[in-house]
Length: 144
Image (spheres, rainbow, N blue to C red):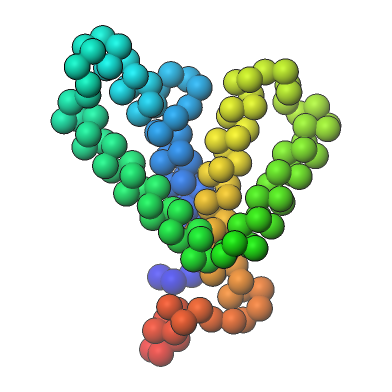
């Protein structure tokens, strides 16, 4: 039940990407666009549906950011960001995507942010696997 594997990492990535991409994405189907379209069409603000969805998205962001900051800390966040940033630079240098396309850059930034949040949510498990060190929050897992 407490096993961490590639599937666990993938599910965390999908959860992070869901929150990130539901908030905003360049396809035009996001919370941002929904509220923007609602304001443009009615001019009176947004309704209960948008407010409820906004609260759900804020809860998702709060969980992702809090767990990432707790797991990585400031230095870890800087290093993970540098890792992802230089990886994007590397794949850009190989011409994998068009740097002239603002859409490609936006999608890359959103996926990179999802990856950063995934690393943060997964870091305690990864560190335990690499070093054998257990977080204080995880001690109950080993008392059985």
